[in-house]
Image 1 (cartoon, rainbow, N blue to C red):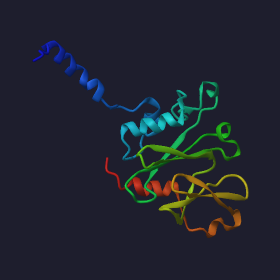
Image 2 (image 1 turned 90 degrees about the vertical axis):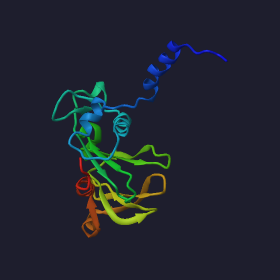
Image 3 (image 1 turned 120 degrees about the vertical axis):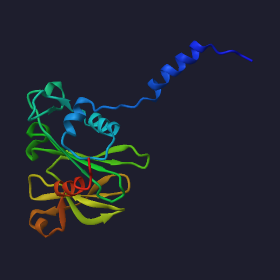
Image 4 (image 1 turned 180 degrees about the horizontal axis):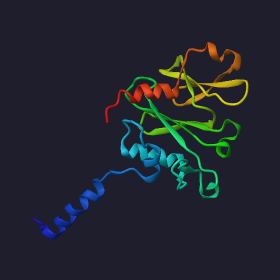
Length: 196
């Protein structure tokens, strides 16, 4: 029978927490991004979303983000809108951010994070536009999304089972007739169900 030294066992147990340890705090970008937002996301998920966005801190409280070090003269804010659009108890997260430097005439861009079948958040949308409207029409369990912006027609995006694709355009004159809820309002309703 082999003998194991007590010092070897002690070293093994002292290292175990390093391998089992998970992140317990938000990174600085995630902290600024999710400040005052009620969400069921874990610290790791918030940090992951912040990393995927690639923002860096600007050093300004009112406009806390920039895209990169070369755009430090163009800081912007971001609005995080957690929802559960398909009522599956897995949070979807809209992020509306930017300014004319990042997003042209629209003045903002829209990103949507949705968990895939492996439980990892994937980025959808990612183009200039205003806070989306969530439409009453459904595809594969998710509602259609309309993203407004400058112009006279707005894209409607439809869930294909893995991501949102262009489905059709809605003319400005038909916009008021749509049955819709803004992502902002949907997020307020959803956050009202979370106790923190």
